Amino acid sequence: MRTDFSLGVLSLSFFVAACGGANSANSGGTSAPVAAKPAASAPAAAANSSGEVSLESLLARESTGLKAVSAKSGDGSLVLAAESSAQPTFEAKNNVPQVMIPIGTEQPVICLLRGDSPSTGSLLRSVVSDVQKDEPKNQITMLEAAMLGNVPYYLAELQYLDEKTGKPLLGALKIAVFDRAGDTLLCMHDELGYRATFKRVVESVAKSFQKKDAEEPKAPNELEIALAKVQKQPIGYTTERHFITPEGTHVELESSTLLLRRSPTELMSVESVRVTESSKDGIATKIRTISEEGGEQAESITVERKAGGKYHVEGTKSGKAVKGDFTSKTPIWASWRQRAEVRDKMLRGRKVRELSMSGYSSSSNPIGMTPTTYKATSDANAFEITNGGVQVRATLDADARTTQVGLKMGAIELSFERAIFESHK
Image (cartoon, rainbow, N blue to C red; front, side, top):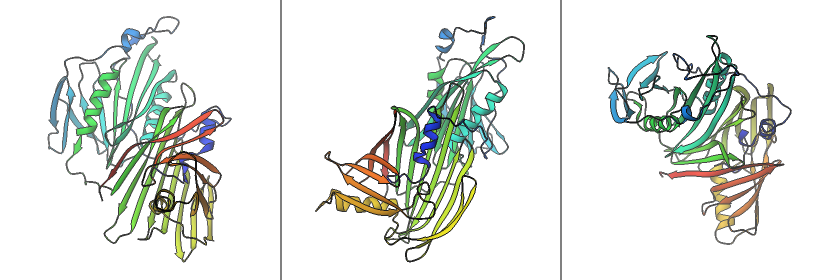
C-alpha cells in the first residue's frame, strides 16, 4: 500500500462530491468496451398498480442441487470448473471469450474473460450506466468490495422496473468483477434472488476459468493489496506490484479503484495508476501517472530524470497541458526505498523521531518535488505522515509497510487496511 498517496488514491474532491458535495457525478463512459446486460425474457416479478412489489420471497430464492462440473470449449482453449445445474457452454463475441453457466433458473450466469484487463471499477460503473440508460427506473441495492484469496473484486446488484411492455415488471441484475492477474473477469445474472448462489458460482469461476493460449503474466516479487473503506464500508482497493529486473533495477506498479454510491441511482468511480521505474539504489528515473473519474481521463503525466536532480514533466491534468522542469536537491526515491529509509532509521537501531524525504505528487505540485515527512507518535509503529497538503495516520509493520492508514475529512472516515501481502524474492 502506498504511504505518500501521490495519485488519485486520496482524491479529496471525489470524496467530498460523493458524500454530498456540490459537484454532480460524471456519467461519461469508459474507453474499454463492455458487455450488455444479459437478455432476460422477462423480469421476475410483476408490479401492482402503485408500482410496489413485495420482494421478500423472491429475494430469498436460492438454487439447490448444483454440482461441481468441469467443462471446456469445443477447441479446448477455454477450461472451467464451477457449480452448475447442467453443462456450461462457451462462445466468443468480438474476440471476448464467455461462458454460460446454468444454475437451475430461467437465466444462466454469464461470465466474460477480458484479456485487455479493464479496471474493475470502470467496468462495473459502465455496465450499471448502460443498464440505467435502458431502464431509467432503477436502484443500486448492493455494492461491496472483497477479496478472493489474492484476487480483489466487486459485487453489486441493480434492481430496475421494466415498463416497455406496458406492464411494470421488476428485475435485478447481479454483477461481479474480478481483478485477476492478466485479465478481468465480468460475471452477470439477471433475475431476482439467488444472491448467495451467484456469489458462490462466480467465485468458483474466478478460481478456474482460463484461456489456455493466454500469455502467463509475470509474477511480481512483491504483491500488496489493501481494501479502501469509508465509515468502515469497503468501497474499493489499492494494489502494489513490485518487480525487480535481472539487472537489479526496479518497477513499481501501483493502482487504485474506488466506487461510491452518491445516491440510490448514482455510482461514482475514480481510478488511478502510477508506474515508477527506479535504479538499484532506489532513485526514481521515470514516473508515469494516469487517473480517471467517472470514465473520463483526469490526468496523464510523465516525469523523467534527466541528469543529477533535474526532472522533466510533460502531460495533461484536468484537461490542461502540463510541461516543465524542476530540480530536487535530494533524490526522489521510489516507494520501496522510502520504506527502507523508514525501516532503518525509525524502526531499527538508533531511532529518529522524524524523517523527511523527497517525492513526487502531481496533486500537490505537478511541476516540482513534494516532501514526505514521517513523525513517530506515542503508539508503537504508529506514525503521522504528511505528503504535500495531506496528513494521515498510519500503522507500519517491522519492514515499514503500512498495515492501516486512516484520515478524517469532517464526518467522513476514510481508511485503507492491508488485505494481503506476498513476497516472492
